[in-house]
Image (cartoon, rainbow, N blue to C red):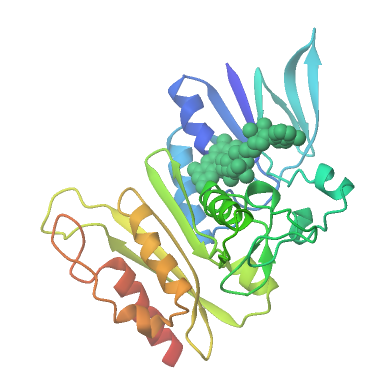
Length: 300
Ligand SMILES: Cc1cc2nc3c(=O)[nH]c(=O)nc-3n(C[C@H](O)[C@H](O)[C@H](O)COP(=O)(O)OP(=O)(O)OC[C@H]3O[C@@H](n4cnc5c(N)ncnc54)[C@H](O)[C@@H]3O)c2cc1C
């Protein structure tokens, strides 16, 4: 049975594993030049290698134009590069805020058509609050409003909107764009701005990539971790970080999310007192190695 996944984002890539485990042939069609479009090539190259090794066929820079079918069943996906046979199609092409009802009620919209909210999650309408996938949030790296629909944000915004609706005066400070996903046995993670986003925002920055290990080499079964930092030229401020590897990635990104929240430079990151024991890390954790390499690049 042939499955065609349209869209190589988080959901499309997560579904590759499910479909392969059920014995399906899997093709992913992605219009961008990479899967997981907000990730740097240093990260997506590792993902490409993994999914290909798992038997998934990737078709990048390919756009879907329509579907073919017979007797009410799909038989193919039509693209600008030809027709792909399909018994099953999964469309995973992103999310848009469903704000028609709000708009019709006179509620102002903001980033990407999501409901515009202030720090207290108030809309322009008295006593109407918004949070979650329908609402925008402030990005703490740029200070601008963004639309990043995630469960973690929805939960925090929901709590604060509820508290404020009940009479409190709490602020939702914002997000730093942290997200994690699992592609087969790879952990893929990001926080802060991606290179594309940093470019769009007009930052002068450089990319610094290192390869480290999840555990001390003296300890069995450590795995390789690729770490990329996006660093503002001149100031050394960490704008974003991304990682990929078979273990130890998902929890490490949280340290960097905290660094972004505190607006740290890579020099600050290099000074962090992180835990070390052979089963868990290397004595110079990949986070620190990446920071030291970035500091060298910054001053050279
Ligand atoms: C496949 C998938 C995987 C995901 N994985 C992750 C993940 O790993 N990590 C993460 O952080 N986020 C993840 N997300 C995103 C996360 O699920 C959402 O950000 C989160 O659920 C948003 O919460 P919400 O309450 O705003 O909206 P929802 O959870 O969508 O809830 C909205 C509810 O409102 C109801 N509703 C809508 N319109 C009306 C109406 N007019 N009247 C009454 N009820 C209405 C809907 O039926 C729904 O029950 C994932 C999303 C998907 C689709």
